[in-house]
Length: 455
Image 1 (cartoon, helix red, strand yellow):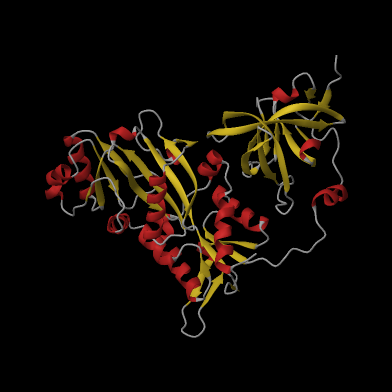
Image 2 (cartoon, rainbow, N blue to C red):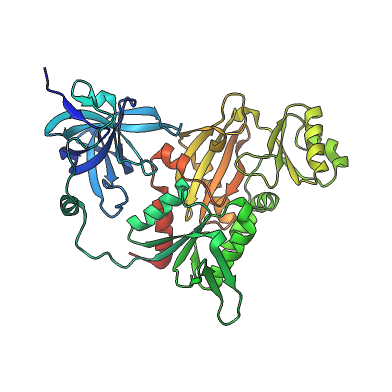
């Protein structure tokens, strides 16, 4: 019988065959599978076998330490993460060393940037080997700061990167944290700039942007606007001011502004040869009947022009319901679109993420049972999907028509072929990075580097 290792709820361990000398793990007997933080996960073939290569930043908040790993691929498995996303993960088998004892374990590879630990040790890997004392931590000791420095911190001074500002409202949002991390990882000086704390001086000879406390923000190379809908007007004004100071903006103020006008966006897309579901727009409730007829009758979709993340989108299943919804919105002086309902889509749509004229990732979003809106914020699930060349072409064409360097393009599959639903100028990263395991935040930083021809 093996002597079991007694561990606390958090411990340091290592993976000698992956070249990871030490990594902090959360020991969780409530989790079945073990998970290792990984980015840039890429399957490849080696001597007729399936392998996978990936990068890992083994120390939390040290994004400059990167270990390039590769391992034999033993499985692909759908895992439901703690945040509720169902992810298809690659599974590897490798040697775990903990407390002077080594044995083989299975690990799923996933981006754990939003988690507190780079490693999660689940009960399958512990079975017969480990006893957990949940009240204790680091029973097996800590590596010294000197040891961690020796393993992971290079003595070289970092090369001078770009000075990049992230113009947004919430520093704790997954997307914003990932963009800051991705920029730092690539050697840039990243600053979170809260929109509400910025103010500007309009002056023909010396325009300025100030930050709360009087700091002048004129010395940035680039900004990444991530403007929430309620801040569109002020956010676009600030972005315009940065552009006046010759600061590169990843998405321009004019492009963001027009992307927030849903009706104008659809007109622009149609003028550029992008197909959309048949859509009607009217000012007066007196035209309701013809409006319903125009889009093929009920069932139909009614959309508030100011709505986001699936809010203000209603499915009217009968003509009577459609009339009631349209007239109710009109009585509130709300601007609405009426759109044909694509029944064959079955509550699913596609989100294609376009960066600098390329589709860098795609996922399928599926609505909850009984729900027709597939938005992740409304409980929809995300999964990897293979998109067609035509769907990619539409996404790239739509982003180009809107003049957006970064765009989340939503497409629905219909019996008439793919139709464009919407183009988002501040698309979220959590769902799509979780589903696809791709470093999309890194792709956004690369687009800025390309503009500056930065190596």
